[in-house]
Length: 355
Image (cartoon, rainbow, N blue to C red; front, top):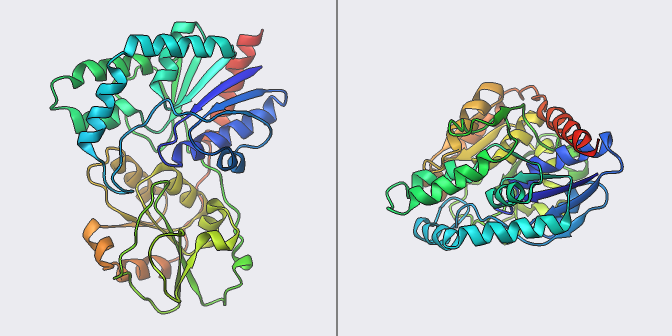
């Protein structure tokens, strides 16, 4: 059995969604052959995906062009979509040829619509798995442009061509996709390894995790009694209460489970991993990001979080919000029911295809 998996490299969240499902699927189908196309480095994928796989280091989607971890470059994104769809039929034909040459039994996309369109043209069964789709993400930014309706229609047609779109919880509503199948949350649960940080019991630790797009932290970052910050290397903040998260030797998932709070932006992977570990979230608003409302509403219902404005983040004016989060009781972990649901769905589909 051969599964071709296309994983978006727009940040790290798409890999974080897909890897737990692939690992669970391999427990059900130990002889599964896996080909992964993803623009992320192989070593980063291998940290999450267990076992051997063939890696195609390419990206078949781009999502949106980002100015920073918090800001979309609208004009550049519009032009990128125009360029991508200028020869859409020929692009799909090339994708179909590529997939036919690889000859998988099934294609799984998170969440490239080109992979789905190519699979359909090649006659290969295909499924999508994600909390969002690029058609719904892009629409609010480009709705006013004259040529976007035609591009949007091609995107939706590709997503609708999948046999099913496994819509993860929390996820966007996706009213235009009649093939959407809602399943539970999916994430790679971390292990609490706080003891390895070798900190005194009273010390509070806050992880700054802004996703796969780099961010510079302001010089006005707050100093709080008994709080240390774990930040990515190159964040521009050098103080005795700040340490590089890479120096801990722990994965981000394990750090999320080990710290007292995570400071982040709205993104599926971090929100769900934090909820699965019972770790509170302080997140920076992204009012123009279409997925934020679904993530924030869900997390507020099942765990503990607080929202700060972009200005608060840039001015370092969020000390009190953080204190309230880390002084309250830690919430109960959330069950990741979507992993087994998605793995069962894929295993059944692969078994049908083989037999």
